Image 1 (tube, rainbow, N blue to C red):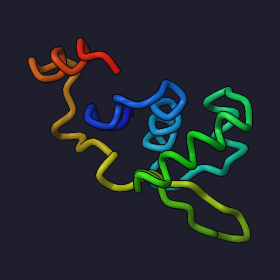
Image 2: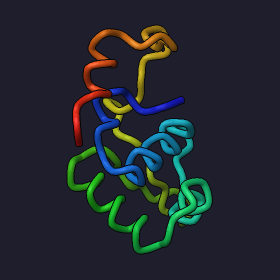
Image 3: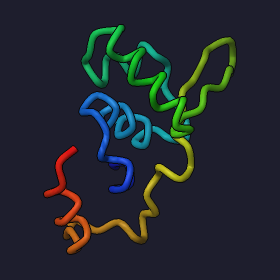
Length: 98
């Protein structure tokens, strides 16, 4: 599962982090799991996590002595609304420069 379209206009690393977290939104992920999934340098991951946290798109929780990172609920798409076919708005957004 991927993050909602409106949260995909971010750096490549931030989008990959959001997608990984959305895919495991119920259980969350540790920094090490994220690093493995996203396959980036730890410094780049730290920057991406800082930006996402600053924008309120992720939360960190302590569970069983581990810090788990989870996406904010608004980033997770509604499975009933999810469609593989891009809408006209999706196509326009894709054409806009970052």
